[in-house]
Image 1 (cartoon, rainbow, N blue to C red):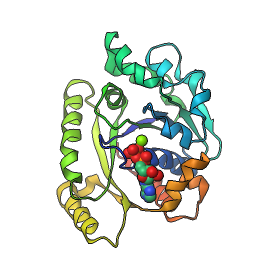
Image 2: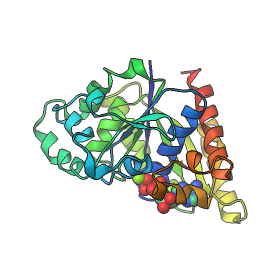
Image 3: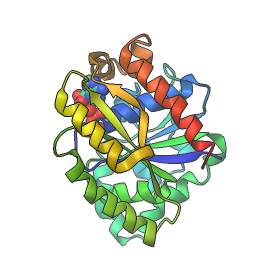
Image 4: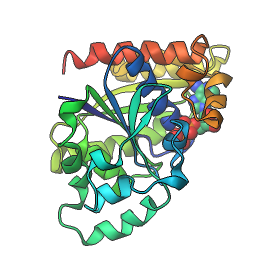
Length: 256
Ligand code: ADP
Ligand code: MG
């Protein structure tokens, strides 16, 4: 049975999608069966997996409103050997349409329950908001991976997310835990980043992943080729870090 993880942080541009795509590729590189769910109407994880978002007959939007099954919508990312449940701008409408549905927070959870036997990992790339879409991700998940940059305000933004996760844990999904904080776009030459990193370790201890993702231009270039950073340049520091992170996640789920 797959373990399901949300990649969440309500801030935009913090490396959620880069982490979702490259962790999917990293896990697949270690022989894991992975489904990547794009839950952001921007469809960046879809495009970054080499799936054209404009050409989709059906997507995660149809799944959420009950018009299609996950299996009917899944595409294959051949270059990195994982499956994608794609998204495009249609998904923005789901936010409003779902308001009239019963149990609107657990639509994704119910849909995924039919395919968890086919995968080792399901990764959900969340939009940059604590919206109904993100809530669907959090309800479906066993855990949350929080990518963050080691900046001065990083800890401040974290408290909103932690509160939301606590509420979801109490009311909707008792399984939900923060698996860990992932330091991304890290630049070891910056004293401030070193300091914030040390603060994170002090406050959160082993909730901080051991793997650190460096700032690496190859990771930023890869999506324009429809490739993960791992497929684009396997020898790059960014690709190696996400392969290491994949190995760390495989180790973590042994204790879940
Ligand atoms: P989010 O999904 O949280 O909005 P993205 O993953 O799209 O964030 O990342 C925001 C920007 O930062 C993108 O242009 C991406 O290519 C770039 N980026 C993300 N991680 C790295 C990294 N480790 N090194 C260099 N650039 C990165
Ligand atoms: Mg994103």
